[in-house]
Length: 195
Image (cartoon, rainbow, N blue to C red; front, top):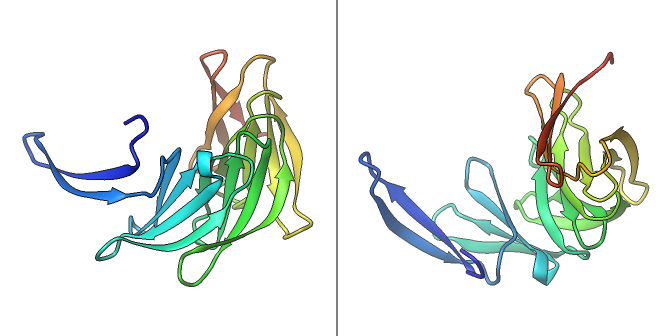
């Protein structure tokens, strides 16, 4: 909704009629929303404010955490255990490594990992649980090796020049990687070769 600073929650009736159930003030314009724990926790990425705000949606919505995310965060990926998160920072060309505390708030960043110009998104390989991030300008996907301050990225895939990998996702069994090319308007599919 453009520069709207609220999240609108609607109830959808069986005939498709939508009724506004509630409006949650996000405290700023969001660039990405990430739900976890069955929708009880909401992480709001605020690119313009260089921060990520975490809300509890169980009962009355409330802020449970706020962390800095320098470099223009535009995407957040949380692992299946809800213990580790990676924010992709478009303006800074890097990924930020966070841990998740027992109260579900993010903590960190523990490390800043260079990826490349316009780092746009992250995905998790389902078998290993490894994080990966994309660089829109460099046309690469890197595996992020997360180990606190010693975290680093390693290029694992190069796309055709001008592809511009924006979003990407692994198949459920990890055998395929699907990449949306923003600049070439193509869906690229890569089959994983041998382990």
